Length: 77
Image (spheres, rainbow, N blue to C red):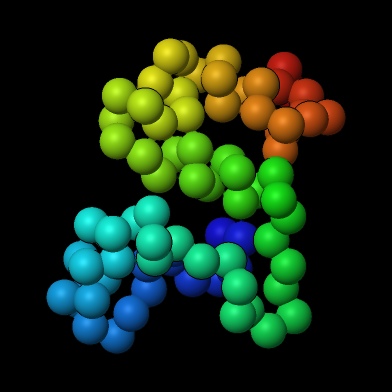
């Protein structure tokens, strides 16, 4: 949603699986023409793409809602 592509896009399904398995090395926010992904958005995505026990939100949805990328979001609307 931030770049118009899935985080691990590739034409090859095998490469997609490789990128997912190696997400710490393969997740990249550079190289999108005309698109800049903010540091807060990058931190949010990196926080969510982790092992289940340590990912952002593992301690409850409030962890996600309180992330700085959502500052100014009115969750009651």
